[in-house]
Image (cartoon, rainbow, N blue to C red; front, side, top):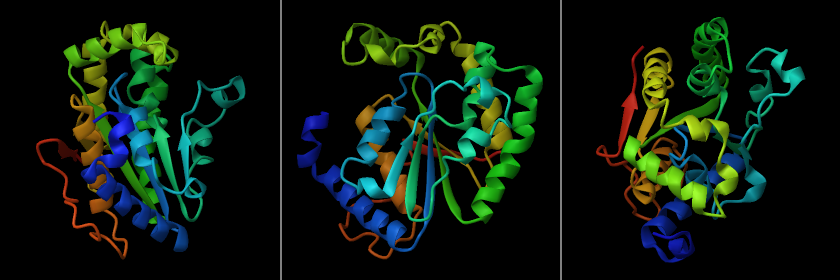
Length: 247
């Protein structure tokens, strides 16, 4: 399913119709939704967000993709620069990477100390519990791809002039540090996947299926009044979507 054909794909259009209905409920009732998109480099996080927002009202959502922290931010409480990006009433915020940089990318790449990493794991579960108890609907996606698929996508990123801007230092180390990323990812699932805030793992080798099933998961877990208006399946495919709950 190429991006230019989305407008004519009936499944996608049905899911987008549901998204429009869901967002209308969010805006009219001052709800707050934060959706985190995490995963290895090239896993499809940004592309998935683009599919989510294709037809919804731009006044009712924001996409947050934070650059590396400034010198001032590096002297602040780690979560501070993310807290200010949380959704306002009536808003959905899509995080293209999030505070979970400190759970995987930063320790793998040596961008934080072991103490900073341990402190993050101590604080993040309590923080998310506070956000949820305050009424924020928090969804945490991890888009999962295998090593060969990542290699193929990285090679494509190097030669495609429309994607070369995505290349980074982390990208160039992704294959070399594959097993180290895996170790920290699994530790993240174990320490921060809770019944209140589970990790939603999306098998992402097939980009289009991954994006559609991620949309289904969000729609299935939010009770907006017109839910199911299109008769489209909203229950995600268990072959593609599974939850990581370890504490």
